[in-house]
Length: 345
Image 1 (cartoon, rainbow, N blue to C red):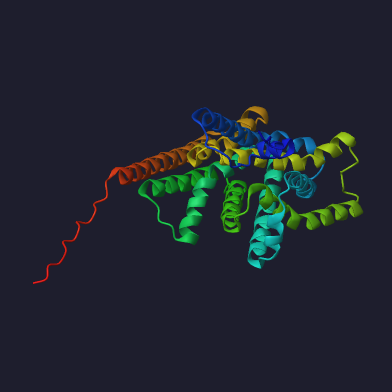
Image 2: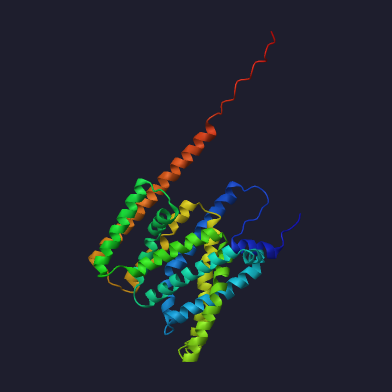
């Protein structure tokens, strides 16, 4: 019996890549589903708990933290890709200027998203940042209607209307538009739209985007150093290691998400995505002790109502589609009656 090379097996197991060979039995399928669910919970759990990490990097500014995140993420992802020997995509990408342009747009948009999020957390706006990821599905739907000409079902229109009402209520509660939430939601929705056009895997996409970010990030760090504002290395080895760990903090959830995406249904991932903003929201209230007056509670309640409507509609639509497919499989196709041979008079 031939044995699978240990290194290759470990690469596939660690990075959630499927490999062919034989049919999957019920027990193995159940184990794969459990593994996928745990990876999904781990991914969204890490994204939800990341507000605990950014304050550890003070007194570094949000700009310096962002630059370190961009630079060290490329290092971590490059090592990961070397380990799994997945580099063929890079040559193909370099031969496609349109895709390179889309990658540059994605890198620019996610840079703005990361920067605003880090600043928001370290400036005491964790709850408002969590709102951005709560309303992200609503913004994604709005972009689909405005830019892609997609048609909405009645329940989806209702959810969007409730979401707009929530933003108005929150604007009254904050005394200003919740611009942190809106920027985070719109940048992340735009990022998702561009990534669909690029059509690269998670690690490959992050590698391409951080490659675009790398030189500007390093240049910014050098500029900070010339001004005497660079914190890296001035707060001890532990603080420097934490800044370098921003690469791991960025890549680790993505790896878990990739392992989940190939093992669990999209409907399950759609529900798991609410774990991250929920954890962030709870951290903002219970750990960072941010204020939540009645107007904000009302606004968040409307957002959650809109998300509940979206989830209900998505499950109902999926169930109807499944029923139609099942009916199409079971309905026998009518065969045409055999033609009678023509008789010659």
